[in-house]
Length: 239
Image 1: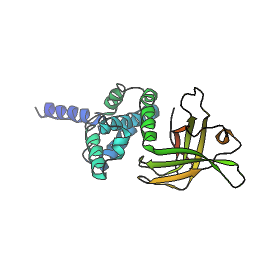
Image 2: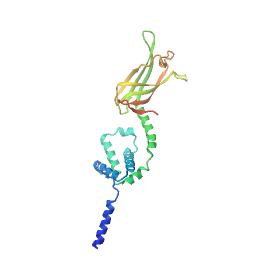
Image 3: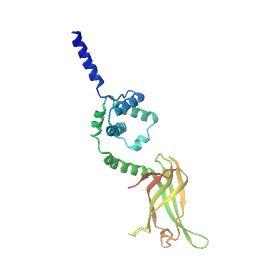
Image 4: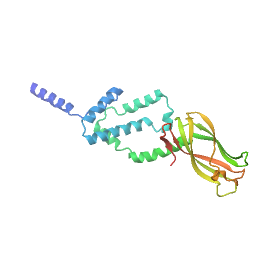
């Protein structure tokens, strides 16, 4: 009887020893440690896939259908609560189970195509053109200098150092605009989140902006095409 009991215990312990390690989502330290244990049980290719799978699952479960813009507006406490909930949602999963779940998600490239474009458009729309005016101002020599006056508000949540625009200047009843050009403006000191600034830009007077035939009834429309951060890197670009 003792030999039978000892054999049963040995078999049970053997099963435990060879069980796949699982994720411990109870707290961040145990979570990271359990991920390391699972990676160690996988070969190099599987470990790389596992890392990508965990990242994809955490992202999907923390977003809860929210856009990146909505997430950026959350408080630190709300972000921490989202991260905790996402971590706990993986509790008890083994490496193969994580890979299986991640395999049910959209391909990463497709997900980027689906999400990045709307996010970029939404963020660029948050760089608001409050007003846009065009004038030809005569100087003392009777020459006319074009001036574009822009008033903008930065509601993107990020500091912006350079803005790229498309400007269209058109008179009512004319099918062809006087000007349809792209240009950029490097913002001295940048524009901080929530800040509103007004700029007087001086296009080249020898170019289309300086055409003396442009009538007083011409109206200017401005579209934001791209925004750059203080390091010169692109934040968002309109497709």
